[in-house]
Image 1 (cartoon, rainbow, N blue to C red):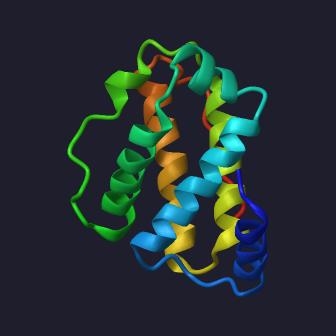
Image 2: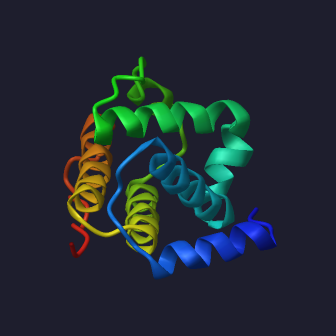
Length: 144
């Protein structure tokens, strides 16, 4: 998904890591994360084949969601859990989602807000698992 200009910019960002600070950082995190999701053989079929996600609509929702969670923008007005109830997902999907999210965050950012992002993602995945009846297994906490 990244063109040569985007790949060069991405490399520069890796060399100059800083903390998550603003909406542009949220967009970078979300876009990069979902690029990895779309390339993942476990998660991509759930998003693209089963759910047939319209990425042009989904990504702005995710910007709003993560902006609300991490920056307190209150931009997200929704209930994310119900949309996940009918998905063909298991604990391994949640574990992989957390793994990719944390890896993406670590690749792009460092600092307190980046740590908070990983903690929030892990917590969200755990809560969703509990609500889906998968409460007997805890997600392995990423090394922070």
